[in-house]
Image (tube, rainbow, N blue to C red; front, side):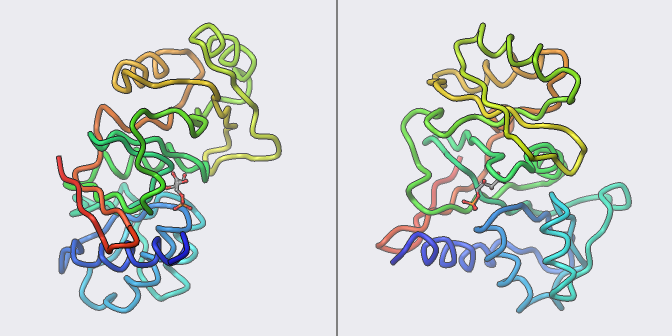
Length: 219
Ligand code: 5RP
């Protein structure tokens, strides 16, 4: 199976976690897109969705699935999204698609976070994938210098603006042995909106698409 086929398989498997008559949180990226397409088949069973990006909202609406503003929703039963990396503890690196801030918000509001990924995303130590950090535009250089002090090599994602009107620094050369500590440390830099570490609130379930089928890891 190709990587895309693995993503599609794991997205289909996540349908089992959809709670009937509830609001579903929807992530961003190619794996989340496959999930949206699978969700369209059972859209009559749910009350609607909250999307973590304009792109996902557009795809959901294209399927005739209702998308609510988060502020008009009391509870999200489950959040389903991909990741760029996961370790065995279900600490994640996310934000390759630049939607990390809204993803973290929707995940925080959800009772359960089910992460879906192909098995190339499972790593021993996070950090080979450059860690995305969303930054207020005027603070870009200052935050960049602070990230260098932490041992990283920030690279400005040129030509990219987040749905929130901010910029992204992708931080290379980090070996993230303490994901929770680093997540806090990065959040403390003035000008940082969010960082792509999901360690303080990791995924609850990780579904991995492998050549031998879907493998489940749970916290
Ligand atoms: C977007 C994300 C995605 O979940 C992550 O980039 C994985 O993407 P894909 O499913 O395309 O491999 O965090 O901001």
